[in-house]
Length: 466
Image (cartoon, rainbow, N blue to C red; front, side, top):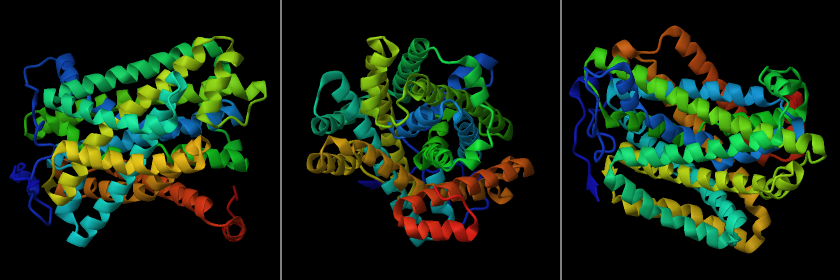
């Protein structure tokens, strides 16, 4: 265990209460060279990678349940919600890029350098809880994938997921490009599986296109609104904001205003393209559920295991269920890689304190495995969906505490200099922040308050009671 000593560019300290004390992910900081004489395409290739690490958080097993439920119950209608959620994600990840490149700080370091010590510790604890909750969803998703493919009991599947600690440590030792390569490979695997699934399901293309157009029915139909809130509320993962603002600093670009501006441009292209890939995968899950279940009398399908069992019989293709399980396993394993890095980033960033990567990873994984194994062993394997939903609720509780500082820091000229958010970005960003926080508060109310109190509360404010 040790305090980090590497310092960031002192020129970036203007506007911060505390002086920057460390760099983010010091073992890979500025290890990927970007030179001014590179062509456009070579620079784009050099900056490509971090966006895909972030994108896996938008297609993790925690999102599958809401996409499946949305497609099975309402056909293609909620594709517009998936699209809007993705645009929100693109905007927030762009702001993470700006913060990391312009200030040399990731979001955790920026919080430490701005807020008081009690506030920093409070934010750190919340973030650690969110990472553990996200890891729980990934453990359960991977375990379900192992069970569907190989018949391994869920309890043992959860235990087996601890082995990915070795993979992460090996890849991190080899170099950051290896981590990016394995993540992109797994994303291509997921995308390829769902591309084939869409061919099997033969969706109505005209209906799919209409689904991307927002419908007033979403606000009028209480059940549809509830599922929409689930899709929106589970889209932006708080740990992704800390992760992205850190890993963009693995590129060794010129620390001049022109160099930073160019780095922001290429890193934004990278993340936007990667998130459009996530849009395809989330949209594909919803379209597949709509095509296979909505018009076949299976509108109540929400369990991942039920979807797996029904896909092959309904589509008439034996391979359909197998591809679904392969994509699920790849999704769960992919997310664990980024969760490892996010855990390291928030501990080092908030506390300026570092422990061995293997210990950090093992602690995070055990926090996820122990409750998963305990609940499954006690209540049975039918509780996996409830575990996934619970993990999303915990994530929603933390999200506002990450988005709010991000908007505040990137909107202050003293901190960002010439890279401060323009007015139109501020309007879009704060609107997105308020929408996300409001929807997540509603999700929490719906989850924890008794139905009688909810009806009174929503009736008082004239809100739809879901």
